[in-house]
Amino acid sequence: MVMCGPVSASCLPPERPWLPSEAADIRAYADLIRGDFESYIAAVQDYFRCLDAERARAFLEAQEVSQDYGRFQSIVGN
Image 1: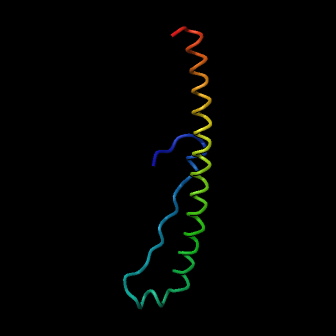
Image 2: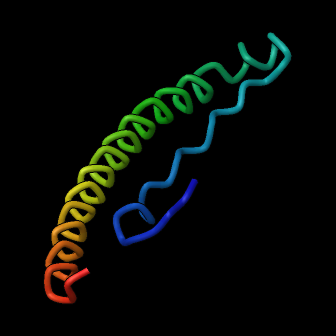
Image 3: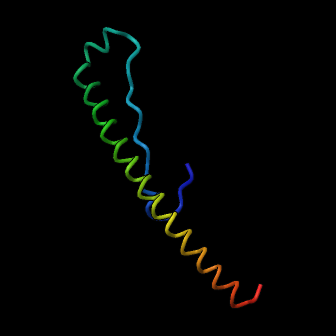
């Protein structure tokens, strides 16, 4: 992931939950595993919202830079 700017630096993807390979271990730790998955689902939704906000911020910045560049071009005459 490319990260630049203050907002995108905070958009860190959540760690994927671990699922044991043995069915007995899954049953033995079901409550913990369930909690890990539920936490992941909430965190990934926050991550998507963060990415959406960063995209909106970057789009607005790009528009502003484009306007600045147009003003620059009109001043230097190129």
